[in-house]
Amino acid sequence: MLRESVYLKPEEMPKSYYNVLADLPFKLDPPLDPQTGEPIKPEKLLAIFPEPLLEQEISEERFIPIPEPVLKEYAVYRPSPLIRANFLEEYLGTRTKIYYKYEGVSPTGSHKTNTALAQAYYNKIVGTRVLVTETGAGQWGSALSYAGAKFGLEVKVFMVKVSYNQKPFRKILMNIFDGNVVPSPSKLTSFGQTFNEEHPGTLGIAISEAIETVFKENNAKYALGSVLNHVLLHQTIIGLELKEQLKKIGVVPDMVVACHGGGSNFGGTVLPFIPDVLSGRGPNIVAVEPESCPSLTKGEYRYDFGDTAGLTPMMKMYTLGKDFVPPSIHAGGLRYHGASPIVSKLLHEKLISADTVGQDEIFEAGKLFSKVEGIVPAPESAHAIAYVIKEAKKNEKKTIIFTLSGHGYFDLNAYVNPMSEKRI
Image (tube, rainbow, N blue to C red):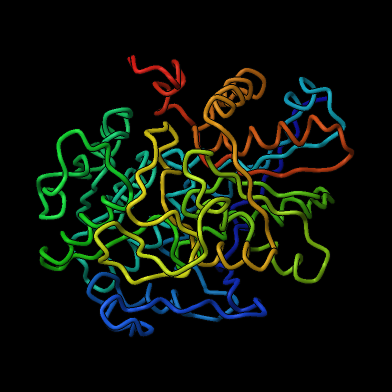
């Protein structure tokens, strides 16, 4: 059988984002002001976010139009392909059909570019000069640097130190797009200076440094690559395209799988399927996270800060605690203590499920996928692959879709020997 790939024409790309909040039979718990413990007033958040993104954060409109300048930039790499994993199926000898939505075709190699372009555009139209952010493995930092170059914004990135050292080519990519990247904890912020030189860093610390910088910089705003409602909103272009592609080939999935760190790739993939789940016709939806940072499977569902210093509003989510320091795994994009409030609520209401896989298992799955399917997956994406392989080995007659959220060509160092201290 020849490889089966499903493409949409550029004109078939979705023209609006899908907002799942319009269809949920329950409300999300509001973010709380850390100073008062009361629901935070949106205007208080204008210090770090532009008004158009705050409007999207609280909107209950079902569809929000994608601006033409953003659509024009999306057309560089979207619609992304849906690919049948024929070779993987053949290798496993399974009756299970496996498809993957491949987001590694973006200019920076991951799904993060989808929201980076939107956030840069909305900041540009309100006159923002500088965007400041954090990044784990570097996918988000490189995506925002690219988007900043496209829309004429300066970008400053605090990159979690362990990933900064493990992934040198991500730094180079950010620099190519004129992004300024430093390891976190850094000596550039008061909060960063409270940590010793040996601290590996966390996304929570990097977020704190980024927000502190926004408060000090003139005409600067903060950009977050995951967790928040408007970020997942922008990423729904993945799931909307996916549903159109499945319709073209007459496939109804039994299961939809994606890796989970903060929730951007997972939410973007699965949220358009939630109305089907609510109607009783939907697929089983599974979030796959690392055993070493299991916020959904081992965290508590409660209010917590999104950052370590406690500068962000408190959000109701599954969390391991803002002070949690995860092991220095190579899937740096999944080393986050919390989870998206939307994803957390869906899990709490049992509309989705979550599971974990270990680091050895994900790299074995990533290597296998590289050999049979011809794409080296990002370590984050390999979590979904490892889970799908386990499911396919059950040899059930069903169809599984997963998102290959990015390629791993900037992460090859992680594949040398994931558990070894000796790196190239």
